[in-house]
Length: 171
Image (tube, rainbow, N blue to C red; front, side, top):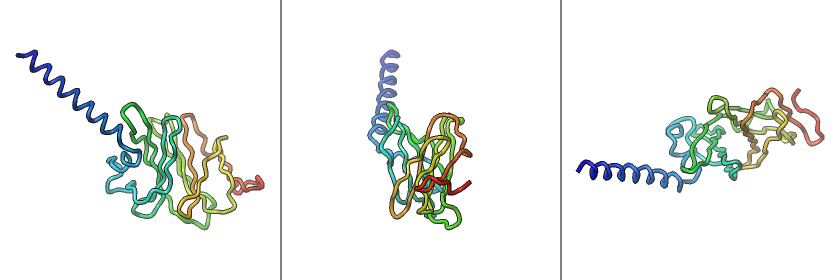
């Protein structure tokens, strides 16, 4: 009788774990990010998606506006269980006439990795190079956005904002 009870309990536990795994595995990155506890009724609530990246190195980024109309991002990672949120990041105004580029950096997993993103406010900006790596610049919904992420040390102060002729816009 005890063996039967043990086997039944073990089967229930395995079925539950498998069901949760299958449920999460079938969710899109946007569904996972929208249901995360940090995205519910807060600064990181997703109001309007501006950009969804394709998966690179099991990472996926979504850049969006929150209920305040500011730009934020969420970095997700794919594993055998499906997508999971690595980091919600930023809150940046959609327009600014004072600076050419808005930047926000965040670190995750005790600084094992980082993600940076922002808004390009000036049409003069052609490239953004952060610690030797060129950021991805994209157009979306009448906004120019940028993002970059990695898993190494980052010197975010080693940043170049370049115009089309290669001159630095900020020194």
